[in-house]
Length: 258
Image 1 (cartoon, helix red, strand yellow):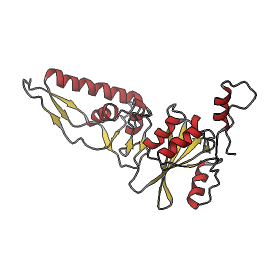
Image 2: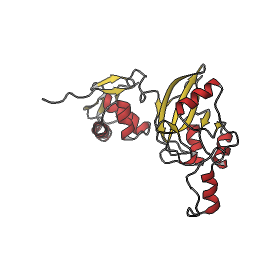
Image 3: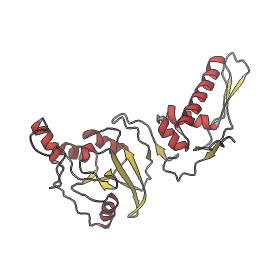
Image 4: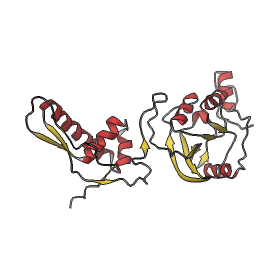
């Protein structure tokens, strides 16, 4: 027995349901389904990767590739052969706006950072806190963090959170990443002086020298009792740039809030 086709999640119906070529027209029509339209919207317009598109549409990457290739062929057929393009039908359901990857996301590429992470849009009255993140804990070297956990706060309470990848960005570029994510405050362990200056220029408040659970640190911050070090520095960053090599006997990975 064939497995039933998984219903594809889309954000909304398109504003336009047909496109008709001017000039010479064959009178023929080609149909684009709403799930094919959504794949085109996410990948070609929003610049999502196929993996990000799959997460947003709640389907497999293989299915995304099939939808995308089918949609591209139909659009090309319409443009090259003068066929009217109609958008209707398909196997889909509408997004309710509550999933981590839904219409309230931004998965575009930042010109400054090259970032491709999907990040939920920030509300007008929301504060966003970022924490350097690894397995539930505060990662201790800002410049090498591979993930941030973002917390959205309204009226002093966390209303949502998400973990986003930095996609290999490091040191100064991470300040641009956080700005793109509309972060207001950063909680981290060790951090170098250059990154601190970049954050300050972008108006992001820094709370460094913090360790332990990321969730607990945010709760402590909201309660007004976060234990942090305003004079934080990163010994790894200093060692890396003063020695030039990593065989002089120090722990090159040691970051400190002292």
